[in-house]
Amino acid sequence: MGKIFLTNHPEKTLTFTLPNVVDYIIIDIYDDVETFSLTNTSTNIGFGADVTDNEKNIFGLIDHIGCHEIEINTSSDGVYKKEIEIITKRTTIIFNKLDYDFELKRVDGECQEIKDKETNLLSTSFVTTDIVKLQYRELESYDLIKDGFNFNDIIWETKGITTNDGTVDLEENDDNTINSFTPNPINRPTTGSRQPNNPIKYITTATILGLKIKFELEQDGKDVLRQEYIDYNTTWKPTRDEIFSDDGEWNTGNYSQNSDFNTNASNYQYDSGYIAAEGDNRFQEIWDELNTNYQEECSDAGITLDTDLSCNSCYRNPQRNRAVGSVLINSNHTIGHAMDVKILGARTKQKWKLLNKAAEQIEGVNGICENGPTQVTCGASNQSHVHLAW
Image (cartoon, rainbow, N blue to C red; front, side, top):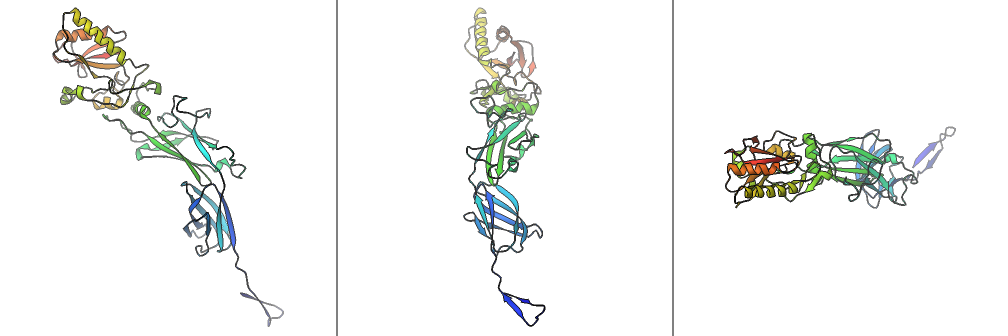
């Protein structure tokens, strides 16, 4: 209730009652709203509140009218911010959920979708030299532009799952429906290990008007192995086509400069599930030919074989190669072009020489007599194996 005094008739007044002014603010959004916060841009005073049925009466919560920033949190974990003008404390905010949906797809340089079975590059796996490109795609019958919004409103974010996954380096791009980046992990392990590395993982999200969709990237077993070569900056870095499945047969225990480990080398198994081989995987072919040649050489020499040969060390990934004391990051073992073979049972100078000869008979293979990593005279008393390299 109020009064108006008349200038020419001060003895008279008019009494009136103002109605309670109620205002409704409608905010278009693409997801259900769970909570929001409202902050006055002049006083920086605000509050937060839960939302039921996409509507909230803020009477009794707000202290000042005027310009406010509202931060909306949705059921998809999305966030949407905008400025609104509040003209009365008796205001109800209505969150008008519009029907909309989209998806994220990994694409190649020509923006063609990468599918697991149709390309060598898996849709969710990668190594850190790859440029990862994700595309925002509206689902059929939805149209952001017709809703009155813009693709520039899309908010992209990529985060590593663990601290060592690091961040990503964004590629410049004028099209906001495309998010391109190269992974930038930190603290990469290059001190040697007999265990596989953990995969690098990222989650990329795109948010539009509060609707948030995520795309998960995680290295598979092949790319975990390929990543080691990048971490060590080896001369040869395998493609996915040069990674072969292995049940541990060619990924066996290897010698070490530790003498205690040396004596039990053949008992150590390291099965990562994969091996890398430059060009092609020749392990089985060379192993079969070596055994055939050795048996023939021994037969010709009148030697009866009562024991078999054993592959002491074949393929070694860079991490394991470093763990056993090798300083050669470009070792033939790491490119899948070497195996160390020993004689089980009684070993004689003649047998070592025949084994080395059998190795030399294989096309493209060199045989070297060694004790651990050190070359020795063939048949020397301290010889531990014949090293085959191709």
